[in-house]
Length: 153
Image (cartoon, rainbow, N blue to C red):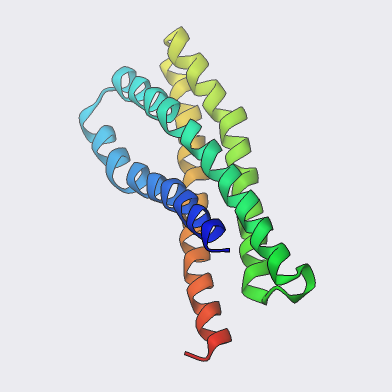
């Protein structure tokens, strides 16, 4: 259980931390100092480096989460664990949408130097990553609150 928990948390740190950095630090600076061709090229490159790590994180989070739930007993898992699973699955679905739709459009637009289409795709990515970031942070709060309520601390 300890090893599963370690890899589960590492996956969450990489994914949610990466979204936080991209959304709260990189995005505002890139928007204020780069023109669309450079900004869109930067984002296509950043996502090209970050998204493989997200795939690894999603796989780790899903496998370790299911493993730990099996140890709890599927029906005996606390409500906060079931909520974490539901939110996590929603986040994974949103990531799949980002990766296969607007990110694919962004890469194509940058390759074709179609900055208007690239900007539209980046706007969709920004919105979906913003939603996922809020969901990820909410899940972290939910887990700590749930653990405290279960333990009575």
